[in-house]
Image 1 (cartoon, helix red, strand yellow):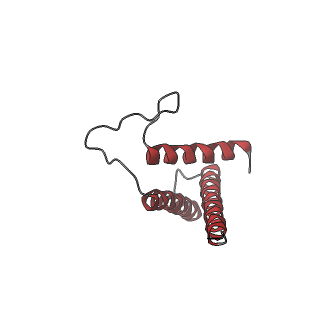
Image 2 (image 1 turned 90 degrees about the horizontal axis):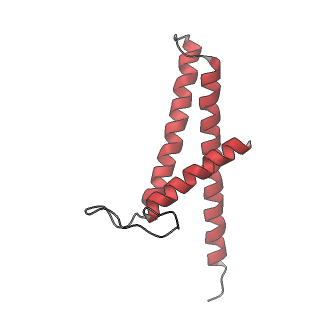
Image 3 (image 1 turned 120 degrees about the vertical axis):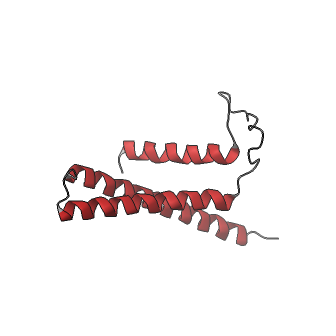
Length: 113
């Protein structure tokens, strides 16, 4: 995985985290949410949003590949390869998040009570 791909995944994670925790000012302090905005975001909704983004990237890559195979005008190989790499990186990131969650769950279950 190249540094650019890692930076992109990290920026997506930071964006999702900031959406989940609310906006932060330059010093990392919370900023009041606008009136009428939902005060808290559930972990499940953040996880669902991330999985939806992975699914969207995979569908986009599949469509680009199909368009290229069918010879649709305006679809070139570099564009298809880029979409495929985006989908691959997002899937690997999702698998890593799943692995971390499973590890955390196992550690919690193995704690003495």
